[in-house]
Image (cartoon, rainbow, N blue to C red; front, side, top):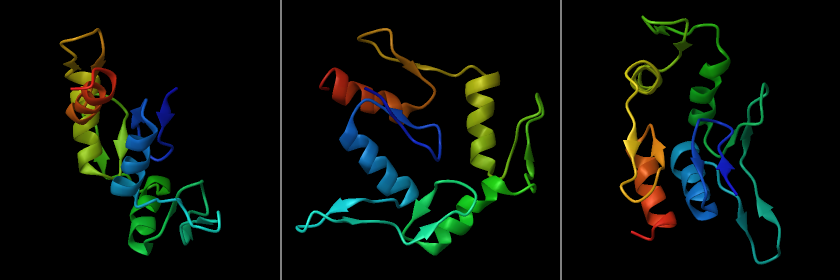
Length: 124
């Protein structure tokens, strides 16, 4: 089973890593209380399903819905609100940068994903 982040392009096969990703990258946490009730994020995007417990993260997220996408790819029509996303786009799409697993045929566009793969698939 794969866990796909609905906010970015993160994918994992491990539920624990998925939860950690949501907490570290999007400040989204769902924790079980002793009563069995869930603590849900306070702030919800009005235009999609994004939720967070921090108002600043919601403001940052809302840039994805803005027409003001100041970072334009020089090689295609891709536009984004964040410089780092443009860098990742260029590396993975146009520069074709891949990080292969030495133990199987898995490849990924991010070193973070490769480390996670090694840890959970090969137990390294």
